Image 1 (tube, rainbow, N blue to C red):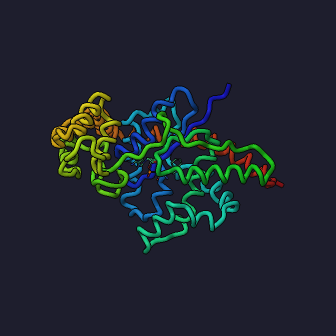
Image 2: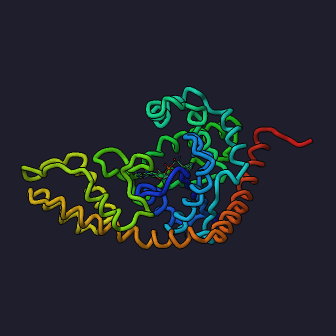
Image 3: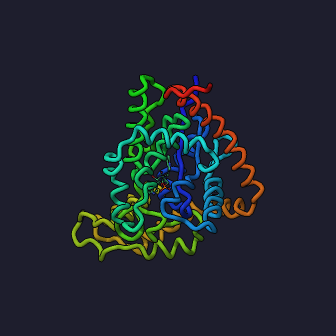
Length: 331
Ligand code: TYM
């Protein structure tokens, strides 16, 4: 039986952080043996925030090294750069014809961008979910490992796939599902007390952070003055610290500190020290591999070239089918 298809991607706007790792990359790494896997760097998507020409390629290179350091294996997965695959923008154009301005304007991620960068509400932001749908549908993916923040985009992708199928009376596109090995999609919190860990929020722990940087960041994480009654409900910054601990530490470590919290005996300093060491344990081997790989330009070039070839073969097949379904014919 043919393997199910898995696809995911990350914008090339900055270094990978723990949120990217646990939300997408780690799941993907575990799927490489059992699925046909595509993982790419979304450099077109990074243009919605206007990077400078001097940074664009360096950012792509950094993310590629980080993918490889985190365990993506170019022998088992197809790793590629979005802008190397011209079939993606063509599918994006075609999908734009079946997407409605109203539904794009209502997307939560678009509304957030309008609020956060009112000086640059470009059409690329509005059609960001269409490009993302093209990324996913170009390989007819079944499963998409992503964090919780990407759920609205996956819903739109499913809508477009279903609409295309209805419009052209076909079952060509599967309806892709967001995926996480745990039951629910996850949102790794930042260390600043509220919201998610992000690339530009200044609240992240990055896969390239040194142990000293990690210790410093974790020790600075926002806390409160401690519980005053047994089993007191946690405020958000404390809940977030426990959430992180649940993700990175051994189960009995988190249970130990929860007990201390519930008995009003918690010392946040001790908890943070433990959390920092557990994060370092996860990140250190990845960081070492990233530092090695990022020096090896020839290897990175080879990975990107082979990945582009494999991704284009799959993308060209889909696009040719889609053109035929829509009614294009050559003379
Ligand atoms: P991006 O680059 O913001 O994030 C990449 C992946 O990391 C996940 N993620 C998180 N997961 C949990 N907690 C967090 N704090 C956290 N922060 C980020 C994201 O959910 C995502 O899975 N639009 C996408 C890139 C993209 C894409 C695609 C993804 C373009 N085309 C097609 C999947 C399929 C983005 O900006 O992700």
